[in-house]
Image (cartoon, rainbow, N blue to C red; front, side):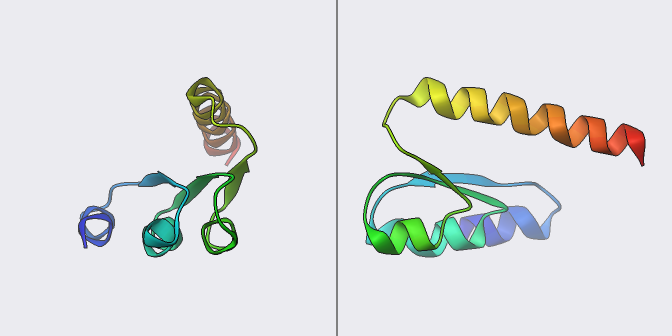
Length: 75
């Protein structure tokens, strides 16, 4: 419900998770990132990170913002 409320007011939402309990939130978020985890979480994620090093999430977010900004400038 929290993710849906944030999206309703216009926020972009990223979610990280790795279990069956996180699957719904991973699917609802604009970007769902899974740290390996179970098949259900992987199936509902947009990005699957193979190791559990959180610095990789930070790097992925930086690259994603950079790509988004460049596409926005181009359009």
